[in-house]
Image (cartoon, rainbow, N blue to C red; front, side):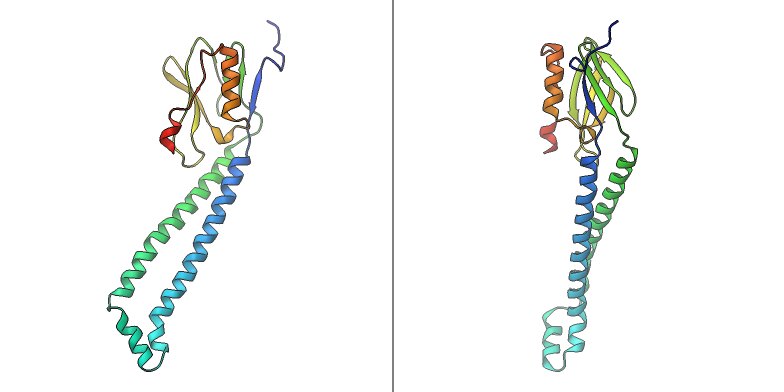
Length: 194
């Protein structure tokens, strides 16, 4: 068996760039959420303490504008969703850092005239006649949707598309060129993500 030339073998490498961008974006969102929470919290504190600090009739007017239960209810209505968003963003950052730590270097997958080989996270090789589907599916949370390879209708390998250094169009073109159009990357599940 002769060795394949680089022109015959399409290599898709792993990249950390989208994950690093995701971490930076989530940190920025967290920073803005905390700033907003502090500013709005200060406003609520001012409304609560204002009547006690403002002397005379102006203080009584501020006290009379809200029912006694109004400020606690407004605080709860503001605080609960704000805390949920901050915790969700923090969890998202933690997951992105975990993804980044697990992401190695090197090839993610190979596409050649005989078949396709996933090299990450585990090595799986299938010939074109065995592959029944190559599709993108999954959710948009975390590392995002995954490129999945199915053999005999069963998923045997997958990798998040954010970990790949090539665009899906380039991967699809390489697959279609090597299979004479019999197999392509199915993107129909992407409609459900948006």
